[in-house]
Image (cartoon, rainbow, N blue to C red; front, side, top):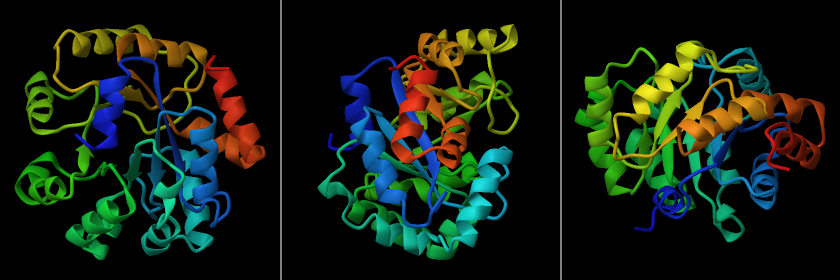
Length: 258
């Protein structure tokens, strides 16, 4: 079992923190610097966003970051070249998050091969239909030991969740609401019910909760109801306002990890 995502969840069962940032934002050449700073300050796993012109699952903060990253000249090819030697200094799991269009332009097998070469452990492709994943992509991803992480929402049926659980490895990305990404101050009762309903299903895969995690209350709630949390928009906002080390420190303070 050499996939770092599996190793992480095998070793650590709770309070896992995964942080998302958009590659190429705020500056095009900051990718490796951001990854190193996140690892140094104790982040468990990192999601690297591939900027795309139409990021439909993302709220305004990440949309704007993607637009700026593209203006800065970021592309999938550039990202791969930046990450060429990342495993010389980084040992935590790295996941690429991106939409199907740029990945298909690169060629799915070429994409997986390149991910494997530079030490990427998995990917999140929000607009990849699960049926297509099973029929066309799963075998290729498995060949390169890449875990394709699937998202579920409060609207996802129990039957579908169980089907996803049976056919994926790594973890399940529990989207806290059916809305786009963004910052929330607390999770309402309906979300708590959703969290409890999924917990009661006793799935084989661990779960991380994302979308809206921005403070101690939402982080603690995610950790009570899953193996941990994914934070994106809040960190992307902080990156725009502060130096890199201050942005990571402030994020950890906001969720009570410092």
